[in-house]
Image 1 (cartoon, one colour):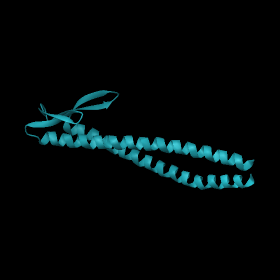
Image 2: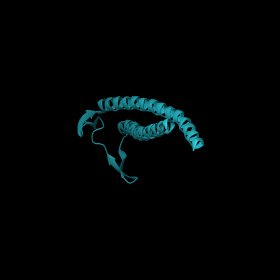
Image 3: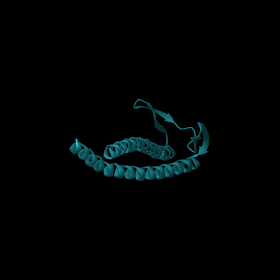
Image 4: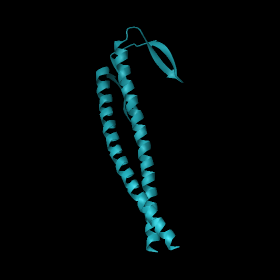
Length: 139
């Protein structure tokens, strides 16, 4: 009876850890996408500053159009809560680089949690199998 209860508790713990791991993996993917987006934006700012005439602008669905930049020294950057401000390209870069560092730190933290949970799952799995085999032998 004790082994059955212990097995059930370990299975519940395993499922909780699996759900947590799944959530962390989704968060990691979202942050990784955001990091790529920021790096692309920083590259775009560099390209815009270097451009002489026309620039290719994405308009969606993998389609682009040519256009001219009216002011290569300014960008509009969202600062949070759907509020965007006009900034110099240098200030815009600073904001984006700060975000990039913050996201990188968050990714590192997530990765540590992912490794810890994966390790816990690897440890629980043989324990569950052993308890299940033990219960089968009793029956």
